[in-house]
Length: 311
Image (cartoon, rainbow, N blue to C red; front, top):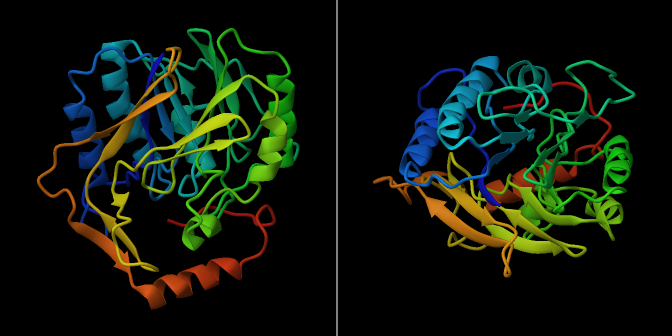
């Protein structure tokens, strides 16, 4: 199984540069164009922050760009929500998020939230089978917030699904990483209830967890399950910045993931050919970063907000 893992495409309503000067649509097209010789792909995963502004136009553009690439490889596409995403528009353009190469719906089961049953505002969790591997997307979006949380409803649903092993194991896909580099901003922005997820996957056939959100590559474990965080398509975070600062630079990236080999999972990071790679997109100095973290820490606990995500 060869998975092309992308995340954080951040497309907007229009095909134009955003406030920091990066054209997200162009970044996605460029990334896929540079992968044109990569034919042997069994699945494509995009783990959240598909749209930067939550607009239907951004989801439609992403779907169409990725569909052209997927059709040439006969590869199903798996989408999950991120903190920038808007569930109603996501559902209108991408359905469950589990699509065939031509964009047809292929989810075998979709969660129904008791708070918003059968409505497009409900949680976007689904499952489908690809070549014997079970792909499960979870919805870590907390509307209006940057951090993430997987609700009790989803965790109970996940336990029920995992009770029966898949032929070749399970891959979980969601946006907010349950691991971090012990950097304060990552702790604040990541998944806020990783221990709850640990309890749900312990002793199951979960072989891999794929996430995004941090805009950098990171590997670790949750229980015995390997966790991979792929760098962003729209930009990446530069950890060579001075301590206690935050810097994003240009350079679209993705990951090729191998499963089912003697040494798997294997991860190979892919970088688009961009003459502007490494140029600063935006940065926060120590005072600005400290202020941003303090604001996030002052917010109410995840899971108690309503409304739409902010761009």
